[in-house]
Length: 240
Image (tube, rainbow, N blue to C red; front, side, top):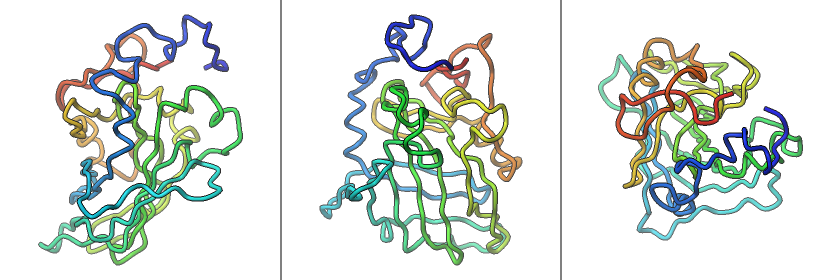
């Protein structure tokens, strides 16, 4: 995409469609009030949910962060990962969840992260211990459309009791078609009740081969994804 201009009527970030509004479905700023639980099933498919804790925890701002970083301690939230060879889920603890206002895998002061387009997204990362150290760059959430995007490519795994757990990531822009993360098909959405719904096709792709997973790109000839249920996948509203 060319540099952002508020006068470019062809730019989807200037769309007049109902999804292009912070108040679409609900005020997207409300999402900053929620913490997040993050677990992984036996196929490394993530399981996400928002929650408001009753112990006073909030997102804590990291001083002097170039990426607008916030964190909270998730060590006692029951986050787990599963293994195909043991019946008991493996607890991820200690664990810290991160939220960024800029893409943490891209230079903080370049045109990419300083673009007006990035301001509507926040980026989630989780770091912890499940026998090995995990450091997972997970999803970008659009506070306007409420779609969820994969912004990172898994580049390294560790084998834990038969379960391949991702340990290293790079920006998806360096792989696949070289597009911005938001130009690929969304992998899910947030519904009116703030449930995090992942599309079935994403879960199927991760289950088939999570180590090689890259988001799909349906192209402009396809319909835009719909935030209805797990089956209503489609292209990104920001697709080039």
